[in-house]
Length: 306
Length: 306
Image 1 (cartoon, each protein chain N blue to C red):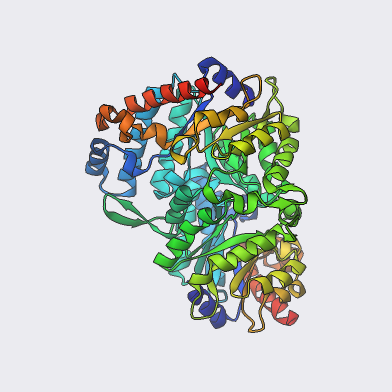
Image 2: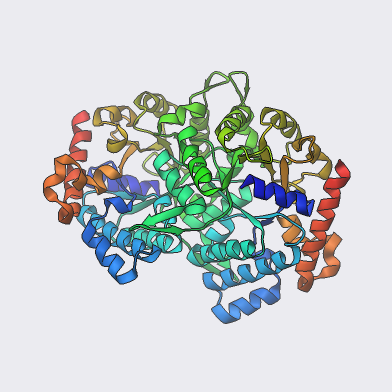
């Protein structure tokens, strides 16, 4: 799967993933009103609004970008209707040729991780019938439980040509509480990075990178610099650009000399661009056009940093 | 919420939680056949079988136990129909007076954890309407992201009288890869335990325990002994009894001198008891009665260890 992603990054010349994390506060009133009118102020109404909003963003940006990253929590909070919208978002994005990174951050003991891997990347066997479930292309995985919590995911990746990104150093302010602490000579995140490199060693594609990637936050560029060397064949998914504070110049160290090795996520900065002063002229009705312009500007910001 | 759980543990005299983790392989053929006949070998068919199986287990055990712990991965792998069965299982268990611990192991950056906390313990605001979503009583939480990944959960717990159990030392074989490593003088799990104690300090109930609990695996009793002292007011959810290898005598150290402080989970050992030689006489048709007997035997095993 990493070969497909890298190919799309090269074709679009954009190491960018748009985070489809649609809070209701981001959705224009006209979309909300229509959904509430048709389905009421219910989970179903919210889910309809989310899906319509997402489609607008995708229609306006899919030709510019290689991938999207829906954050499942933003859908899960709307219960079953929200999760239906999550699945419909995945399917819509795939129909537009986008690689879908399901930001699910799952991880559990072996037998349970196997079920999560099936849910998001594999197929479930029901009485001999093999049925695909959420069917993202990549999923994010939490490493706290160690190898037997990760292996079911890498097994499914090998079998179904899928990929994962494992949390190494997260973008949030308190990520250092455990991740940065010195553990037998190096920080926890570096131990995790070493393991990510190892877990991914059998899944290196033709592009030279592994389908087992890592998450390292844009808000910690100095960590990016170290981890780029610790995990030379690991693609790094970099959240935290834009709204969380990461800037283009901070991103250089996440890339290898081949200009590859990292893909930068922006969520609010793109999908809610029309709410930022810089894109205010688009207004609510132009939310999708504002998102398109924000993608173009982000691409330039990254390019100019090199 | 911890007061409600402790009250139920005292009333049933059973520090036991039954893990409702219904793999299809555990479900009697008659239930599967009926579901497949009505809904086909589909996600809907699987979900129907799971729900009927769960109801049988719950009907046979609810008067003996304080709580159940459905593992959401076992439902998520059946997609939307599976998650509907998860929600229906929660509602059915609550209608029987059981405390429901949603084993979801969620955790993310602050704004995203807030959505997960809403999804599982809180209410979502849709145009001014407050709607409960999955509405478990407790949820399990992954600590890898630190305080700002946990605080949205404790905020919701305070607001809605709910609880969480945070992963400290998991029951799986490779949990030690990161959790046991020495970090500035003590293992990572102990650092997490210290933080769990701190995160829960404002949520101590009348029973003397906090609504912020911890997960420590039965498979590591020596860790239980240490963590019992590190987190004196923390209730410990103990998975890994039975099928994973934990035994009654291993459990003593997880409890305080008041006989409280721990609740032991068994999943396969109860719900698939009829597949064990010891309960083979019940047969498939008696799967629920076998589960009831397994609960009684587990209760005796724990009592005899004191």
